[in-house]
Amino acid sequence: MSQIDILLPKMGESVAEATIIKWLKSEGDRVEADEPIVEIATDKVDSEVPAPEAGVLLERLVKDGDVVKVGQPIARIGSAASAKAAPAATPAAPAVVAPSGNGNGKATISTVMAGSTATPIGKSGPSGKFYSPLVRNIAQNEGVTLAELESLPGSGQGGRVTKKDILDYLPNRGTQGAVPGAKGSDIAPAPAPTPAPIPASTARTEPQTPKVLPGEGDELIEMDRMRRLIADHMVMSKRTSPHVTSFVEADVTNLVLWREKIKKAFEQREGEKLTFTPVFIMAIVQAIKEMPMINVQVDGYNIIKKRDINIGMAAAMPNGNLIVPVIKNADQLNLVGLARKVNDLANRARMGKLLPDEVSGGTYTVTNVGTFGNVLGTPVINQPQVAIMATGAIRKKPAVIETPQGDLIGIRHQMFLSHSYDHRVVDGALGGRFVRRVADILEGWSQDQSF
Picture 1 (cartoon, helix red, strand yellow):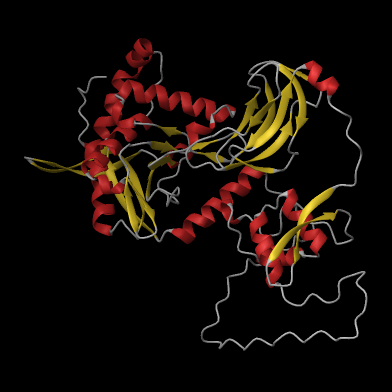
Picture 2 (cartoon, one colour):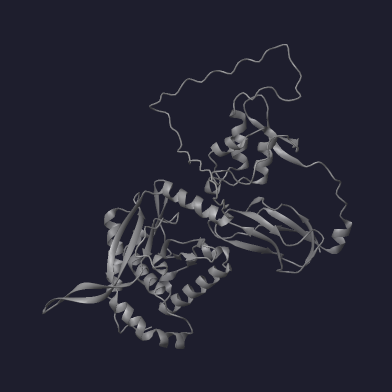
């Protein structure tokens, strides 16, 4: 067989790159078709890349920890004969691509031997920013400090510093002093011009995260990769969208009594447990159909009105992290179909078996904080969506019941709905009417509803 390059596959519409976590096969190993050869991680989910055909893994083109673009070759497979025919690699000093000045203020690419005496830079800094091996090697060889990297406004996912960011930064870095090993010159270098001071009234400073040092007896726990991604995503969402939250209390007594009446028959007939989540999703989908401007995304000063209604459902994992699997085209499913989807995605989320495409493409998200006994919450928008709803715990409470004979005090099943929305495009009128409409649908649930 001829040699075949294995490319990093497309993993959802919003996923552009992945991090190589761990190679499962070594060079020279036999691999079967569809056998996983490497574990990868995106900002959505962890997954494996399989071999497209049976053969021998001839070469691994990327290393553990590398950040790889979708469509980039990551490995090469071929026949056993190809592996034997391949010439033995001559050991060479490791090299990295690093920029060098060309005298006109622009950066050019040159090969720099690794082995700089600069202090090694870790995979992440105090702010939680991730630095790829290539960025770290360029920084070390060019004498760029961790403090400088931390100050760079990264253009990658979650503010990550990319190779382009550091290459663009180096030519404008200012006077660096004499280059080690350079010969002296009779001509003294011209002094760098002193920049004009910026008036205090116009100077902009980025807010700095306060440095916190552990005290005696404290335990220092490093965030795992997923927790770092969640942290970056939440901070990005708050910086992107001005959040407003509206609250409504709903009387869901009829819904509770209906579920108690039919849940055993539902499980016997459909083989699925019936929770409240698919009912909440049905109500949200109906409200989106009536108010489609809640199902939008923002691109600069453009509003993208989404055709599909894809509902994300936040799910807690055993390690405490959060993941949001997505029910695609939720408006095309009935209650039974939604129940199957909800149970399947929730179970596989807990086992870490979700596929990348199953955690992308959401247009609206619901999170059930009542699962943890919380009465209400103020959820953070899952970008690039513009709204998210939190459903609180259902509790028995005394309430006023209006009847033709007069008002009565009775025991009712009540819950809070919290609706956070992006005030750039969703005003209080739309955001408030939407959550009120969802509450009305739940309150009007018929005890004779079929399934």
